Image 1 (spheres, rainbow, N blue to C red):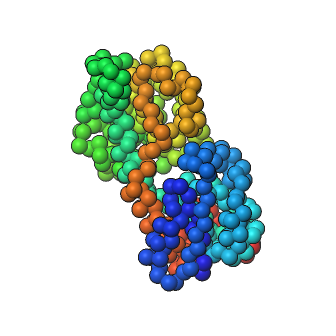
Image 2: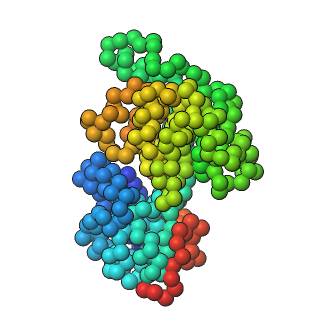
Image 3: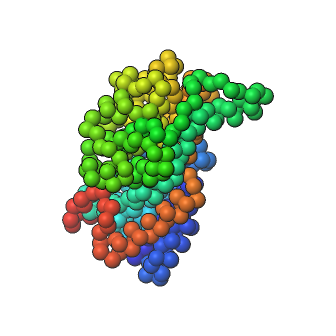
Length: 349
């Protein structure tokens, strides 16, 4: 069995190969090939194109196509896997995506060809949870604004909104998957009241993390001092948060997003911030990345901005390759995987 590891600027193919070898020894042959833009910014741009338009919207380098021809299992991170890949790889049994999202894979084409598509979940959950907590503190305590003011030659003491403590406040989480659960554990030390909105998670699970499940999204916005978004982007929840929700928030409340920008109507969030209808926001994800130099977001005083770095830690990379290696092992040993995301057709190659 040959495994093709397609690396990029975030998850190197060499580290994927090492992890698979550590897990399986000489039972597999692992080949490496690089997919990447000319820079980190270019790779981000290509990722955004695929998230909006699918894997067919980004060209696949000929080196990847040629290497895929003999692969039995294909491992990718952000590299596109459009229909053409399945057409040239008759022996391909599975695609393993080294992250939770799989917008870069043509899953329908894989299913038609009888190819399993699996992802890895929870790889960056601790990192993203810690950054969400950091964003809450940064915005509520004006940490980034204070630092910028001092570096500009000042000694700032007054900011757009009065500082507030996170401790004993009410925190509302939208979505209660891997990241939100890690965040709930970290928030427990602050003795917050934890509200959770997630129609797909039962009340017992939420309670086990010290949370209180609520049945309406509006309750989260109305009662929380901090609203933090942790849902997964799906075709059904695009831009599902907007003006009607921000109008429910307390004027002293904050909105946090380090999940996906396209779940939020950012123009309406900007309006709420510019008009000071809420205290502030902290955002790691943006509709345009990097933000254009003339972006109005850069001039807002009551928002903390970071450049989509929530999951970017060495620990995340190590968890990623370990989870990939375990998925490859499971596929080799059973022909299936616990994180399969499709139902392949049988006998259609």
